[in-house]
Every structure is written in C-alpha cells, then in structure tokens.
Image (tube, rainbow, N blue to C red; front, side):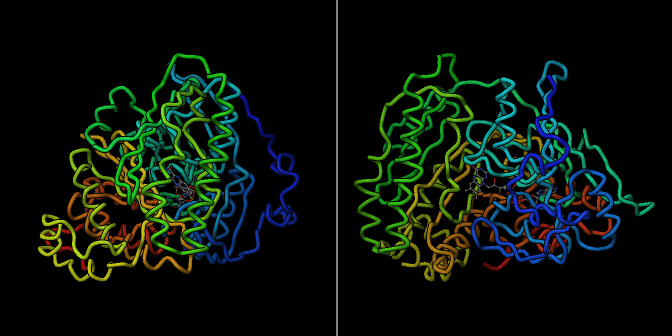
Length: 510
Ligand SMILES: Cc1cc2nc3c(=O)[nH]c(=O)nc-3n(C[C@H](O)[C@H](O)[C@H](O)COP(=O)(O)OP(=O)(O)OC[C@H]3O[C@@H](n4cnc5c(N)ncnc54)[C@H](O)[C@@H]3O)c2cc1C
C-alpha cells in the first residue's frame, strides 16, 4: 500500500493560506519573526527568524545558514509547557506532510512528514482502511509535536511507543555540517520517540498503524473507584471522570468490537458535538468567565452536570470518531499528572482533599494527608492555596500502558500508568488560583507518588525534580549530547533540564 496524498508543493494543497504565512512570497520561505502565542495563551514565542521549509533540502540549507544559533521546530503550538519556546530560529514544518502507508513484516507502518496534523494523517489512513493504534482527545497536533511530548489516549501505550523510526536533521559533530540521520533502533530510537525537540529537527516519523476498528461506548456512573477499576477488564479502552463537588465517577466504558457501526452513530456524534463539546463547555464558561459565582459551580457539578451524559446508550462507531472530541473548541489550560496503578486510589483521595481546601470548603486535608504535608514542610503552600481555586471541570483519568521510551511519562516497564488531568477555563489573566493549585499538586504528588507531569502540559517542577522521576534520564541526556554536542537544539528550559543532575537527597523548595 503506498500513497502520497499531497503533491510536493503545499501551495497547491492549501491555496487559501496567506502567502506571507507560508513564506511563498520569498524563495527562502522566511516568515515574519512575529510573536506567537500557544493555544493556552500562557507561552509567548519571540523568534529571531522563522521559516516554513518546503522539503528536507530546505531544512538542511536553513541549518547551514544558521549554524551556531539556537534552532527549534514547533508543531501546532498546542503544548502549554516551556518545551515550545524558541528565541532563536523557528522552523514550522507544516509543509512536510506526506503520508505513505506500507506493510513491513506483516505490520502496517506509516511514514509521515513531521508537520502533518494528526487529523490529516487519520483521514489518509482511513482512506486505506487503517488508523493509528492510539489517539489523544484532539487531532490538531502535528505528528512530530505529538510524539515529542508523549501524547496519549486511554487503554493503550502513548503514540511515542509505536514509533519505529525518526528521520532527523542535525549537525555532524566532526564536520559541523548539517546532515540527515535515520534513527531506527536501540536507545537512540527510545530517546527519539519522545525527545522534547532536543535531538534535532524531526523531518518524518515512521509509526506502526493498524487496521481501522470499531469501538463500543456507553456511560455509567459509580460511587466507588473499585467498581470502576473492576470494569476495566471488560472495557480496556475506558476513561473516567471524577466529578468535583459530586465526587462520583462518570465512566466512558469503551471496548473494541466486531459489531457493525450503529445506525444511530451519527446521532450520537451530533449529541457529542452539541451537548458535550459545546453545550457543556458553554455552561462551564458561563460560570467561570461570565458570572464567577462559585456556589453555582458547585451546585451545577453536584446536581446538573452528570445529566449531560446519557447513561447506557450503547453506540458502536469507528475508533477515529469515537476516541476524539473537540476539546480545542475553547481556550483552557491543563496540568496532567501520571501515577502508577498502585497509587491511583490514594492520588484521587489526595486530589479531592486538596480541591476541597483550594475551593474554600475545608481548611485542612484529611488527617493522613495533612500529617504528610506537615512532615514535608508544605503547610504554608497549602495554607496559601485556601479558597484560591474553585475547580470547575471533571478530572479525567486515563490508563496508559508502559512505553518503550526513555522519558515519555509512561516510560518504564511494570504497572500501568494513570494520567489525572486538571483543567481550568478561567481567562488567561485570571488563572492565578489555578496555577497555585497546579504548582502544589505537582510538587506534592511528585514527592508522594512519584507523579510525572505531562511534558506538553503545565510542568511546574524544577529540572532536578523532573529528571529524578525518570530512571533512564541519564541515557536521554547522553543521547542528546551525542546528537547535539553544541546544544543548539535546546531552549533554556530543556537546557536547564538536561544540564541538571537528579535529586539524591534533599528536595527542591516548593
Ligand atoms: C485542547 C488540547 C487537548 C489535548 N489533548 C491531549 C490528549 O488527549 N493527550 C495528550 O497526551 N496530550 C494532549 N494535549 C497535549 C498535546 O498533545 C501535546 O502538547 C503535543 O505536544 C502538541 O503537539 P503540537 O503539534 O501542537 O506540538 P507543539 O506544542 O508545537 O510542540 C511540542 C514539542 O514538540 C517539538 N516539536 C514539534 N515539531 C518538531 C519537529 N519537527 N522536530 C523536533 N521537535 C519538534 C517542539 O519543539 C516542542 O518541544 C492536548 C493539548 C490541547 C491544547
């Protein structure tokens, strides 16, 4: 199977994009080095120069032209972390977006241009009866951006795990010339599968695919976590939501199925779009941004919100429709913390305790958790959080099977990981309370449960604390040094991360 849906010239594919933006007015593909902000409007990029190269040769010639300067690539700027920052030369690889699907040793493998958005990739794979083995909630990310931060869904490995080859542009250490290297095996591949842009410029990604499949889904509500976890055997793709202020679990039970697509699947899609993607979110926005009445938030979450999820409506649809939503429809900010399965119960109890304090409903955590906070000397941070943030979004919990990577959040053999996500829809200038909460959660949960923050979301830990969470971080650092001895592919955030040693005894101050 082989196809290349896009011609060599992106201008033919995207005739409506502004010429200046694609850089077509200028043979060197220069974009004006204007300020850019990310989706969450919490990061600003101020590159000295910006380009949208059309092919690999142009990437190499840009690297030659800017030898010795900082060079970083970005994708769709849907990360919230400092991993996306660039103040030197910015490369936007949106014009490298071909897709080729092949069969290798009975395994479907797609070779995908680095700047190809997941939505385009899925469309092309679907046309050939295939799909990705794992999907996040949205599809606007680029493939290179998605794997670089360990993007994941529920019930599978993260996307990074399925990568079998990464084609990188970097500088040769001996000659100093810009070269292309294919990374196909060993620790180098494990590093390249999730590399925060620190190994070089990703030109294309080879990723395992599978035949398109169908997923059956239905909602149910539970009061006990143990019941939710028991259902995992029957519904391995499930994800669930802890509903704040109601403190029950709303579960999206999901499993692969051989059944045919439901006749009412299109109706279900319309329900998701109108009721969940827009209706529910507009209701949340109305409390958080327009009225700001906390008691209304709590009452709605306690009595109204769960009614949005129609229980026991069993629907079968294509995986690439069922597993995603329009979560990018409204601007928001998120922190996501990964804990191992044996910590999940305690981590959710701790989260609830902290949310009660942050929401001004309790002055202290429950006895055990409060004693732990005291022992860690974190009582002042906790006191500072009191009544600062009324949580207003379901806490999504997704299971991620351990990855064969060096530093994706689910890296390392052993138990499954569970990602707990905390989201705020407050306006960018009104996020102070949520940011305090996110800092406290990252600092406490990393110490208590070795919780790892998602690399692409808010990541409010110091470099030492971050790299201590990854047993193979030294190998990652060594690979980065080998691939980028002069450190030109680092920004100041990845530099601090890569230059620091892990914590051996004392923790960094919160
Ligand atoms: C609404 C929303 C929903 C989300 N849902 C999920 C979810 O369900 N699951 C999940 O895990 N994450 C999710 N995310 C996070 C998102 O998937 C990651 O942050 C992802 O990295 C964003 O991809 P991007 O293309 O926007 O890359 P960017 O954010 O632009 O870049 C991310 C990193 O990739 C590097 N990079 C990009 N392109 C290249 C290249 N060509 N060469 C080298 N390095 C490169 C950048 O330097 C940067 O370090 C969500 C984000 C948003 C805003």
